[in-house]
Each structure stands twice: as C-alpha cells, then as structure tokens.
Image (cartoon, helix red, strand yellow):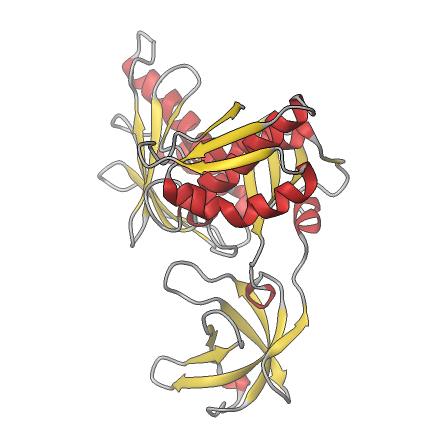
Length: 347
C-alpha cells in the first residue's frame, strides 16, 4: 500500500510544493515570482490568432505576454483567421522553445487577457491526495530542499544494489539501469530484481523532475520476462495516466514508452535548460540559507558571500528579505568564489 503526503513551502521569491510517495519525493511543483498567469496550466485566456498554418493544422495564439500558445486545429474548430480573438484553455505549459498547447473554447472579443487563472499551488498539491493534510513550516522547507536536491541529480541508487541514471536529450529521456555490485548468486535473478526496482525508481524520479515525452529504459541483463516487466512498468507509471503508452520490450533489451507532458518540467525551472542549477536557483537557495541563519540567532548580524552572478541574482530577493529581518544582513560579491559555494557567516 502506498502513502502520499503533501508539503507546501512558501518562501521569498518562490513557493515549492512536494508530494512524497512512501516517504520519498515524488513531485516537486515550483512557482516563482514573475511567473505569467496566462501561461499557467489550466488558465483560461482570451488570445488573438497570430498565424495559421493550414498544412500542419496549427494556429499560433498571441496571449499578450510570454510565448504564443499552439492550437491543434480540427474540422470542428471552424476556419480560424489571423487576427481573430479566441477563448482558449492552457492544456500543457511552454517548455524550452515550444509554446504552451491550448484547447479552443470558442470565439471571443477584445484584447488578449486572462479570464480565469489556473489552480494555485495548494490546489495542485491537493489534486494528488485530496484527504491528506498539507504540511507547512520547517518540515515543508526541509522536504522541499531534499526534493530539489534529488531532482537535480542524475544517478540514483537502487535498494539492494545497482543504480539508475536518467539523462535527457532533445529527442527523448534515457534511463540506464546498472547492476553494479548487486548481490545474488543467480545473475539472472539479480538482473530481474534490479530491473523491477529500476522501473519503480525511474517512474518516481521522472515525475519528480517533471519529465515526459518519449522515454527509453535500457534494461540490464538478457532473456527478460517481457509480460512481467511490462506489467511492472504499467504499475510504476500508472500515476501518470491518462495517456501513458508502453511498447513491448525490444530485441535490444529496451522498453520504450511515452508519458504525457502537461506542466513545464521542474528540472527546466531549476536549471533553465542547462546541465546545472541556474543562477536564480542558487540565489534562492542562498536566500533560504540566510533565513535559516537569521532565525537560529535572532539578534546576530550576518554577512553572505557569493559569486558575483549569484549575488546579482539574489539582490532583488535581498531587498524583500531585509524588509523582514532589518539591516542585520549584508551580501558581498566574491569574485574568487565558485558559483555553487555561497556562505553565510556571523559578522
């Protein structure tokens, strides 16, 4: 039996929601200051048709802010014309260079605007476990920090030995299962156990990272029990339904599946599409570190040291933080410091 718990951490500059599965982070939802409400999943907007591509049955909708939304046209949608105002729902958020996808509600009047916002962070959390209490405060911050650290990782240890590596490309997400030092006298049995554990681990971590689309799992060993592993995959990826499609195990020992993309990938928010945490992500972590230090010693003065680009990214949040803490914290840009090595010290 699985147990899910919910956590909500509201901080300076961002709020983070976490869903755990049997004590491990399963989903991390991040909302940051400046996020565009018209681009949020579930938002209803008035937009204007910027361009129609009849050959590919697509229309590009200007929302007034942020990238254009993409509308897949069907015969039922009628013949949209450029410049027309339409009412749409955001069905999946923008990611990378691709705009949000939308569903046509009908014709509209007026300029692009937000009609109804998408669900807030707490409502999004409750959708995963409606009867569960949402925990806040220090326990929520600790859980959000742990979830964020795991979301940024690439390699994950399996219970009993072995590991899973998860890496993305433009085309797909690759999941590599490694038997490593997994113990067991029967190599085939050890490989089977590792593959089942890997499917469960990969499904959870992919949800944590917010990754969807085409996923290829490179299983370990040979002579796989196809029906049993496909059943295991269906169970592991069941929470991602509706829309999950799983292909039979290939002759190369891989499972290919597709998982629907809806929200912007969490890993993209944390990294801005790069390989490591973005300057903004590190700056917000520094702000939380300052808050912790200040709370642990209310009368003390502190100085934070960070690489220049991290200090610059943190400056807008420092202004808000100083409004709460007073002028007992300073931030110094240290050109000799690595971007990931910020520090908060007494002064």
